[in-house]
Length: 255
Image 1 (cartoon, rainbow, N blue to C red):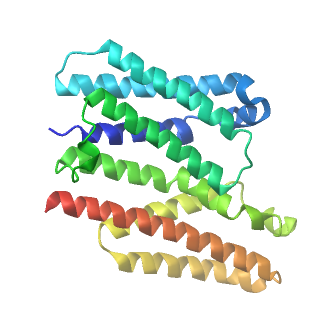
Image 2 (cartoon, rainbow, N blue to C red):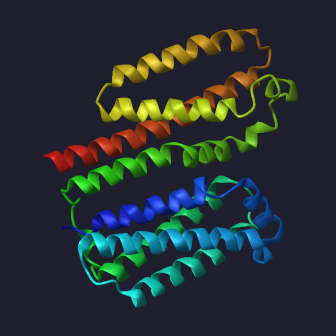
């Protein structure tokens, strides 16, 4: 059995720790206090525990003896690197590139952890592992990426135009409704693409356009219309990309 699903599990753990198990108060505390943030240490502890759980589970699944030394090294690397990377990011502005570079850095560390723990540094050069477990984990990772991480990315991409939208237009909607609508929309699009039902994507966009048409035609602010259109296209574009990648992985493993 290939070890490649372990890398997906590590990435899933990272996404859970970074986007679903990190309250906004922790982020605010890190931005305010940088290296001195206590909440940053809580966040690092969460990632360390998740990494340890994944490695222990993988050792048990493989039926191999538990290497406490290897797990300690890997968890120490994750803890130290995550603390430094996130603390350094706290000095940067909330724009796209710091976010992207932050995630690339964390991903690179997890690749190193994977290679060290499995002692298979050449595995990254191999083709996709043709095992059901890899496919399932890749799909799980794709859906997790389509939710909160994509919302953050789209928000950062639109950040420079956010201030141009009138305050009255921002306060006329339900609290966080746009966030959850975007998540549901992306989940549906990814599902339609994976199932090769692209007509469902068109139906979803048409339905959204109908509901949005009245609001935008009544609006006298052209900036709001452009802002909504940009947000929709970015969200749909990310969803299509994730869905196409997942469909390629599924087709490759079923071939």
